[in-house]
Amino acid sequence: SSVGSGRAGLEQLLRRAPGLDAVYFSNDDMALGGYFHCLARTIPVPTRLALFGHNGLDIGQATPQPLTTIRTPRVPTGKLAAELVINDHPSHVADLGFELIEGATA
Image (tube, rainbow, N blue to C red):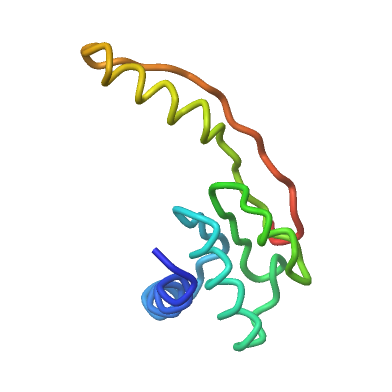
């Protein structure tokens, strides 16, 4: 789960599915790797390939084309998880929401 693995993963994915028009990465680091792969291969983003990240990391907004990403409430999620473990709660479903950060990659 790194910039390098995102770059390599997108390269493999495009070899298998060259007509792909969008990729959602499991985190922003990997999405940035995919973005750098596109820059190196002159693949136009987002007109040829749209890229989405996950986490809403600040670094994703510092690239020439800010990353489109999903930001989840990481601190509240961690607090709730710790609370559930400490209080020995059974399985629990909680909707803590998310925010779409509209960038220039999708």
